[in-house]
Length: 177
Image (cartoon, rainbow, N blue to C red; front, top):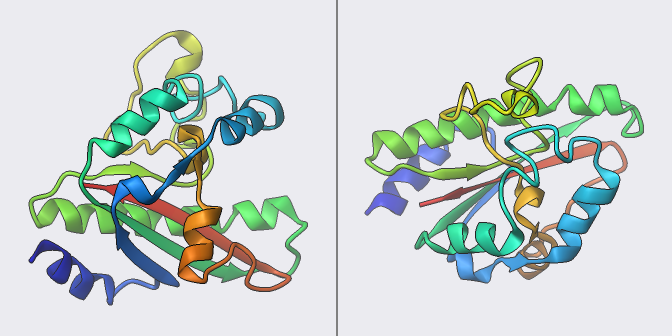
């Protein structure tokens, strides 16, 4: 009943796609975390990123503690995909949709655990850097990759991809419940 009602409500959002599944279908990989640690400038800078989110095995256990997961995706066209400023400027719209979907889930009596895009950007300076607790834990969503989740196998299974065109940005969020 919950998924049917939520699916009815999802029709009102500008989602490219959404999919309900068991968290056990996700691939957790230390390789993804390696990329975070060695290539992402946000590593160690936020409560939404490693190492603050815990080891991959801990993140996996946390995610597998939920029975179901909803993956949502939005896409947006930009004039130049190589323009990082333009590309990242499309992120807040996806985050707002993610927050709205999470609110719908809460309205239906379910408290989701949300993973979304990139590193949290709510505060100008994350409290993590000062050894303090997150100032907005109800709004902060760790990024999907921070948990070592490789979405590519799931997307392949669904016939989806990250690349929908030369200048199309694709954003994904996972809402566990």
